[in-house]
Image (cartoon, rainbow, N blue to C red; front, top):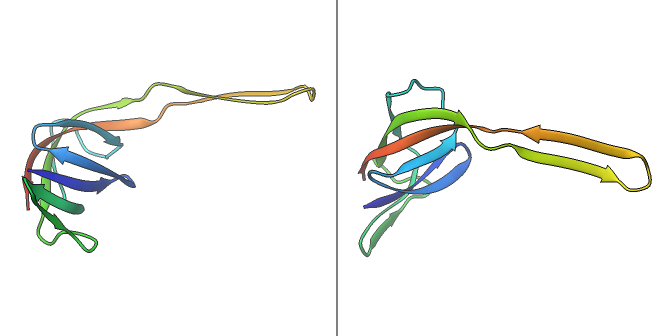
Length: 103
């Protein structure tokens, strides 16, 4: 069984037992969360789509860790204008593990 969930403005296809890095969620490590923004649920050949969400479908997840992604370097330059700008960014994430899909 799999589901398509929406969290942090992004959509993810998840399967039970899978680990996933999503946008930061304010929750303690080891806590269990319920994601109720389920866009689709599928099992084998049968797929149930929501309009926009599937009624009564929930995904139970456990928070495994918090962290920061690798640094993304931003470099801007205007040639012959004596302009260079260096900048970096590290995005925060929350690693979750999918416990079960109810739908």
